[in-house]
Length: 120
Ligand SMILES: [Zn+2]
Image (cartoon, rainbow, N blue to C red):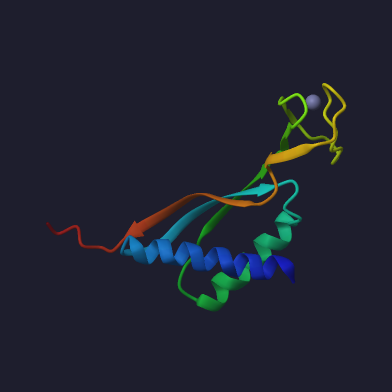
């Protein structure tokens, strides 16, 4: 399952962040899912749930946000939103298109909780 390996990669990334910050647990994760990422948000969510369950340590609130597909035309250099995967410039009709965003997953925000050492 494609989403499961993605979730695992992301989870490793998140866990490294947690370690780097010496945090006790991960509270919340905001994830941008590009329209062209080829990811089914609900499958990704269940893959994450499964990972959480098997790690048996954290309960993370996962927020998924869809990211629209944005591109730039290499002919007229204008930027536009791609609708229905129509890779053609709406301004000049050119088809030398560069995808700017919306073609992957972006870890937008990770909220960590530090260890309980508020004694000082
Ligand atoms: Zn154009």
